[in-house]
Amino acid sequence: MLLQFFSKFDLKSGFWQIQIHPSDRYKTVFTVPFGQYEWNVMPFGLKNAPSEFQKVMNDIFNPYLNFILVYIDDVLVYSDNLEQHFKHVNIFLDVTKRNGLVISASKISLCQISIRFLGHNICQGKIIPINRSIEFADKFPDQILDKIQLQRFLGCLNYISKHIPNLSILSKPLHDRPRKNPPAWTQKHTDTVKYIKLQVKSLPCLVLCDPKLFKIVEIDASDIGYGGILK
Image (tube, rainbow, N blue to C red; front, side, top):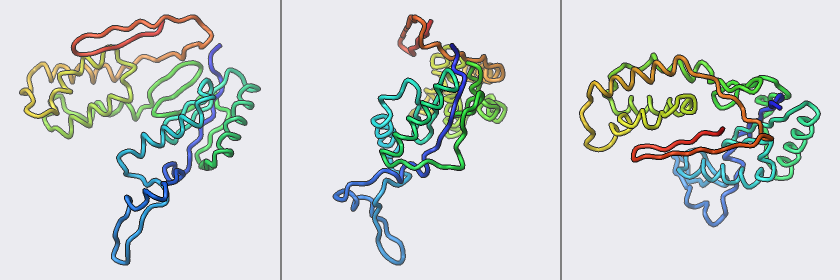
C-alpha cells in the first residue's frame, strides 16, 4: 500500500533546544563592546552543531523511524491511512513533549496527501523535486571556470542526485576541479555540464517503496564511484 498521509513539523530554533554542559560553556565565549558572554545552549554556526543535533534527534526518535523521518530540525510523519496517521502523530507529539522539544506552530502541516519536504514534492507514492531545485541549471554557464561557482553547481546537484543515474561517476571530472592544482578545463568538462543540465530539466519521478514487499539490494563499485539499486 502506498503511503497516503503526511504531516510535517519544524523544531523551533532547533539548535537552541540543546543545552551545553556547564563545564564547556566557556568555550563559546564571545566579546561585545559592553562585556563578555557565553552560550548556555548550542548556537548556530558551530562546526559540529548539525551533526550533534542530528545525533540527539536520532537517539530520541530511533524507536519510531518506521513512520518518522528526521533531518536536522525538519520532521515528517507518514502513514498508510488516516486512522493510523492520527496514532503516529500523537506518538510524535508525546515523544517531543517528554523530551522537552518545542515545535514551531507556524510551520505545522497536518494530514496532507501531498506535501513538500526537503526540496521535494511527495504525493501518491511519487517523489518529485520542486521547481526551485531544478531551475538552477540555467543559472550556470556551460564553462564553470570559477572554483566557488563550480562548488555551488555541485552543491545544487545534491538535491536531485537520486534522480540522475550514475551521477557520481558522471560528475567526477567536475569534482576534481576544486582540488589543489586541478587539471585544465577541457571540452569534456563542458560536455559534462551540458549533459547534466539537460538531465536536470527532465528528471524522472521516484516511487516510494512498499515496506511490505520482498526486496533485493544490488550494489556495484569502481575506482571512481559506487552505487546501488533497490529492486
